[in-house]
Image (cartoon, rainbow, N blue to C red; front, side, top):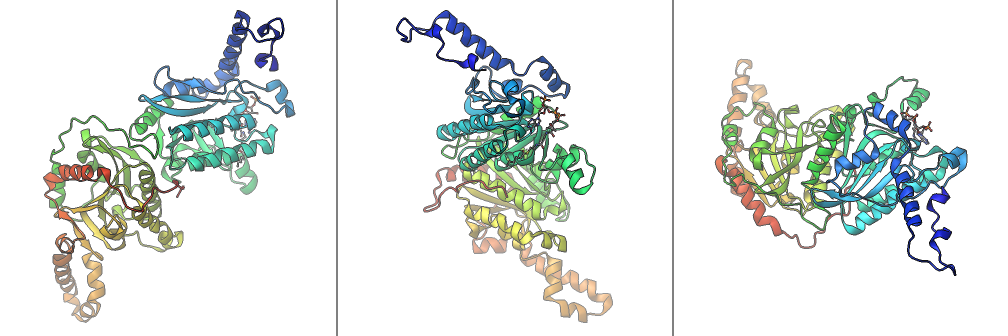
Length: 538
Ligand code: HXC
């Protein structure tokens, strides 16, 4: 391998050993080295990769980036370890391609692990290349995208490869909240390797191709006797719907790269920038008839919050995050009047939109991401409370639910709420209520804002009266008292009278009012409040 990268070849020296201009020979040598670096591990390995339905590491970069924008760095770095047969297997690039390119005309740093070279395993050179790239991305304030396809720590390199992950994890944390970080899992991702993606902001997986686990099937079998396949603990389905590790699932690799590019269109380059403005041809004062409909339906009837979001958003475009995880909350990106807005909604179609452990984590982490990257927050509220039960209490709903309160209170970006129907009790307070520091709190005429729902309130306030009523009149008493309670509280007017709601809106004006309010808040500054230092995994 040394002969390929020997810079002091005699061909490059003049009579007295002085350097002279490059000769055609040196150029020829250079070109052959570059060609070897480009060709990777050879036809057999590439065929094996293709047989698994996977693209090569270089093809992936081509799909991800704008055409002809990739500039590679570190292509000639070589595996340094020679133990356990690595001397003969040493490879140019050390199993990872690193460099810079553009997405939608904007700079990004990207690395792509090459499974055909030593299983994409991470040795010291491999890790050093990724770490150096991350340093440059942080310094030049551009997003970092990692494409992972690796057997994990390179076993032959021992502790050096474990330390390699240490280098990367530390930089993931340094970059957190400073530049957007995206992980694309396109193969195995095992052992400690999963923790770098977990430290980044968003993780993508592809059905049937991506796997993430701390302990793979062999270790599970040895430790517990349980026989599992790759998909059960680590496929895209469990990680996108149960663990919440994965934010986006794609059907194929090209579909995945399309989704990454779309996500990037909503993100700023760094915490020092604003997200890109879009060209919107959607009239700012377009009415949203669905909101009028909400005012007329039975308050117990469920609906998908997605419909409200689609109708509010410019061109009806909603880029949903965590689509399959904690479906009782709906979060993602939209544009309003061209400006990027992060939207958070309770989703009555799932668990009546109640807050639980998973949705608390989902909402809180999303708010914290938005706050790091100067993206305003719109909260669409229809929530009866926290999901009750021993399972939730023992699982720590108090600890997890508190994260929403922390995230909203901490966020200094513009924050606006619209209460559509229910906003009861602790969930009313947690969901961006006025005194958590919200900028504007709007409500539809259908809003019901109270400590709890009428039936529950009446059972507590009038327990004795109901108990003492004759059996055949108990239900009528409940109904009458519930109605009295509802007349007082099941409207936004009591709350508007105290200033906790800024304005009750005519439904057909909502889109216009929201756009006006976000424009007003565009240069919002909160004295003494700084951007948080990092987007810790919650
Ligand atoms: C060195 C590795 C490797 C590794 C794979 N290879 N993983 N080499 N270190 N970790 C090599 C194989 O030897 C093989 O080399 C080539 O990559 C392809 O691997 P195959 O096994 O043939 O491929 P496949 O059948 O597709 O299986 C892929 C795999 C399996 C599921 C990833 O290789 C595997 O289980 N690897 C170990 C995964 C693991 O336990 N990683 C955790 C390491 S510890 P040849 O020369 O034959 O082509 C860890 C802790 C980090 O990561 C902690 C950080 C804090």
